[in-house]
Length: 215
Image (cartoon, rainbow, N blue to C red):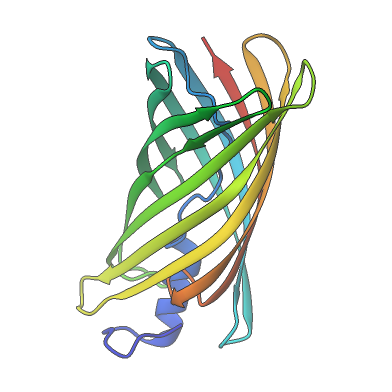
C-alpha cells in the first residue's frame, strides 16, 4: 500500500488510509428520486473490512452517516451526505422507468481532511463515485435495489506526493416500508481495487443499514 513518492512511512500511510481515508460506499437509496419540492432525510451505520492483498492485512472500520435529499424534477434530485470521515454531494438521475425495473445513476463527489496524529497524517482525501441503481418492487412494502459502482480515490498528504486508486464493485439493498414516510434499508457491497492503492490495494467489504424519512 505504500507509495514511493509519499513523504510518510508505510505504516503511517496504511493507518491513514484504513482509519480515515475510506469513503462511505453505502447507497441506501433506490432509483426513484424524491418528488419535486419534497425532502428525504436519512441516517445510517457502515461496517467495513478492508483487505490489503500485498501486505496480507485486514482492518475493520465503521462510520456513522446522515443524508439529505431534495427533489428538483420528476426524474432528478440532489443530495448531500455527512459521515464520520468526510462529506459528499450527489445528483440522482433516473433515466429509465420500465414496468418492472427503474434505473438511475448517482454521480457523487466527496472529500475529507485528516490531521497529524499517531495514526494519521495531515492530508486531503478526494473521492468520486458512480453507482448505477436498478430498482424493482417486490410487493407493497419491499423494494430491491442493486447495481455496479465505480470508485476513484486520491490521497494527497501535506508533506508531498500522492496516491490514487480505482475500485469496481457491486451493491444490493432491500428497502422495507415501515410506514408511508419511514423505510428501513439494509445493504451489502463488495469492491475490488482494479488500479492503484487508495483506499486499499485489495478488497472493501461493506455491511450497513439506514433509516429514511420522506416528507
